[in-house]
Amino acid sequence: MSTTEMPPFLDAALPVPVEETGWLADLRQAGLDIYKRKGLPTPKVEAWKYTNLGGLAKTEFKPAALDVTVAADKLPLAAALSLDALALVFVNGRFDPAVSDLGALPKGLRVESLSKVLQAEPALVEPLLGKLATREDLPLAALNTGLLTDGLFVRLAKGVTLDKALHVVSVASGGSSAAAFHPRNLIVLEEGAKATIVESHVGLPDFPTFENSVTEVTLGEGAELKHYRLLNGPDTSYHVGVTLADVAAKARYESFALAIGGALTRNEVRVVLSGEGAHGVVNGSYAVHGGQHVDNTVLVDHAVPRATSSQLFKGVLDGTGKAVFQGKVLVRRDAQETDAQQLHKALLLSRGAEVDTKPELEIYADDVKCSHGATVGEMDAEQLFYLMARGIDEETALALLVEAFVEDVVHEISDEVVREAFIRKVRDWQTGREKAVWSE
Image 1 (cartoon, rainbow, N blue to C red):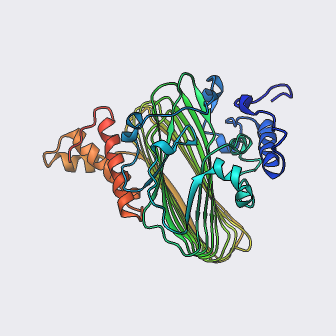
Image 2: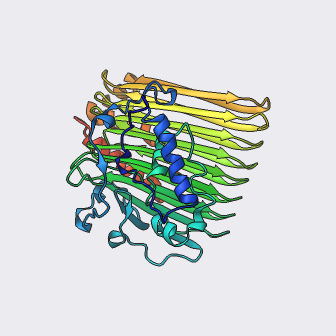
Image 3: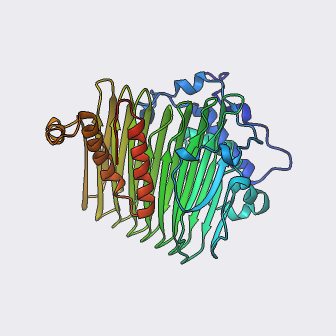
């Protein structure tokens, strides 16, 4: 990129107001500086080798209007997960209390708009905000930092268990033109706290939208977070999201993402196991058809001894759908007695589908137990014949086998209520797939 060429999306990078100085202004400027140096990632960057963001650069995205709202009866809730949970609705990255229903929050739980916290109590988030995301190798996360305005702030006090899940519904709406927005979420669980947080990323099928989200997660010693995401935007939507988690000693981070919608989706998860006995689970599934593109990129960093992790991803591709899986386990020199497992499986339902997979182990310790694997194949003809021989028509038999393949990883979700909600979404995708026939 030449010195005169400016990367896209910076038309929202307004000068820092005179009254806004100090750490937040410095943080925003640091993010903008990184993005100006690095620009929009291209396939020449190894981490983006299989995902081309050229469509983003060609679309004239404008910053999402600050005052966009969606009436309750117009929200695309059918595309979101159906859950009995504390609901928070964000429209183009901004919290909308009018269509949210938090109810009475339990003692020890603080849930607020990040913009409100930044205005009223900036010192509360200063030690954590941006510490994981302001990196040279994460230019879009740096852009998010540079344009940071709103998002979700969650803090759960020491020893508190949240009995009901938090459900964050992120609605993308282009309004009258193509719109880009950059939500920032900060989740903090103190020592021994336990919570379930679910995200549904959906949108209105109007003008194109680009959601560039960043979620920073900090888990104290012995804390447990179950973090689940549904990526189900309309065909006019682009979603690039990165989740960065720091997991302390004896803490547990469980992550799952299901991608079934959107023109282009990238789900990137980076987990640092920073305390002995920490455990990280990063699972996911995807089902694409038409010309959809889904990218799952994972890095689990074993920074200390005696931590464990697992990755399991399974996907189904139909039509000319394309998927990418890049999964890496890094075991540092002092991280002895590490146990890390990784597996990715993809099922191709058409000759036009394509999947690129890149499993990696980077190990510097010698007392470890690590494995990785990847398989890509077509439907097993013998299994299909077995069902058809028992009177099941071909399309229904295919739907049954596809569901069984995807649900294998969905069943790894430890929260039963959330698990059932995701299974229903898998079946929704089945019924929407061209020529698919599904019945209960």
